[in-house]
Length: 137
Image (cartoon, rainbow, N blue to C red):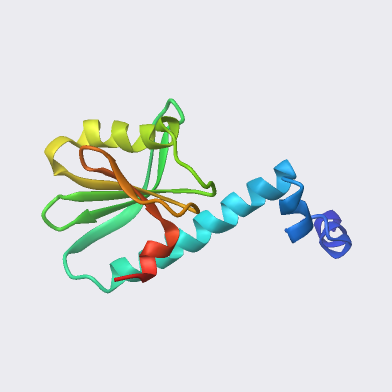
């Protein structure tokens, strides 16, 4: 198969050199890997909690999406967006804002997890956290 040959040649390999060159394909791969990893970690943590009704993602017809949405038994919603960037701008918070507006008072919090060091509250019920906050007290 073509993909087996490509894999052996290293076409799909995410290397430090490709990342250092800021190769667009490598950055996209890093984003997909980070999102998969973080969502997996969040789903593990959600499985340990009582009162979780379900997990999933949210997508609009306009193409806006939120990577992970956790719904509690009481209807409350907590949402997570994962970004492989050092800084977060307003565009990256926009899908969480749209979900917050659509869900209304059931929206507890939205969190953008990113690779930067800063953590802060962006606006009402929307927060930006460093990914490593997942493992800190």
